[in-house]
Length: 294
Ligand SMILES: Cc1cc2nc3c(=O)[nH]c(=O)nc-3n(C[C@H](O)[C@H](O)[C@H](O)COP(=O)(O)OP(=O)(O)OC[C@H]3O[C@@H](n4cnc5c(N)ncnc54)[C@H](O)[C@@H]3O)c2cc1C
Figure 1 (tube, rainbow, N blue to C red):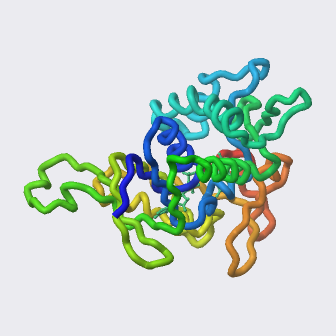
Figure 2 (cartoon, protein in one colour; figure 1 turned 90 degrees about the vertical axis):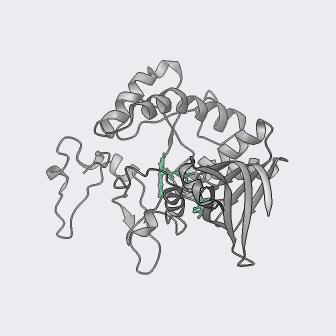
């Protein structure tokens, strides 16, 4: 058995930033990832990330919140939109750029040079060429590996969350509120399951795109974390909203590679197998730049 203050499951942008924050606050952290650190959706993200633009660009949390609401067709959770709009861009600039040093593209004045992207009404997207996610993941990997209070366990797959009363001995425990005490991890090398106990457990295992035949996600995106959370009685909502990239490179028997969304930004058309454009049926105003709620 291994033990720590905070067990972080997943090594993408969510897991790495959570691990770094907890370690900065003085916690002993274990970060466990199914594959090598960096085998994540985060590494595969090509486009940019919403950051805080210079004041002259005329952006505001209210404007960003309105864009998110519009892209989410009014179905987003208002509290989550508010939190993201108020804190996300600042964290992107202060944590990812200033503190950790992600090599975002800079303008001639040495400051961030944000660009625009579909569904955004202001220039607020930070880019690192067309491999922004990889630049972020590489920077996070270095910070995680260098931190003295983070123990990195690669090749460890979450099998199940350790919960009481589910894993308790007293049958009357079912009446108690559920609590997570860590997780069972499968060590890919030894093929043994080990118990990691923790005062706090952070589930950051990403999405489930790889359950589908056609996906731009990496093979590790099989939704194991969602399933474990469900078994631990978490309520799972919105799983019907899966992002599919409409433009990937198809090579038989190979994983799909995203053909950059900037192609459509620059005027590329989506056509069906007969070569006919079809977006007019679904999003006549935005056509190929529709954000994806079809
Ligand atoms: C091709 C592509 C392009 C994208 N482009 C953009 C973009 O331009 N802008 C943007 O904002 N977003 C983009 N995204 C989305 C973005 O990449 C994701 O929303 C984000 O990276 C999710 O981060 P995460 O940390 O939650 O998950 P991930 O980065 O997927 O990390 C999940 C981690 O959990 C681990 N894991 C999974 N299962 C287990 C398990 N059972 N046990 C232990 N560890 C496990 C994985 O190994 C990985 O380390 C894109 C995604 C893809 C695939």
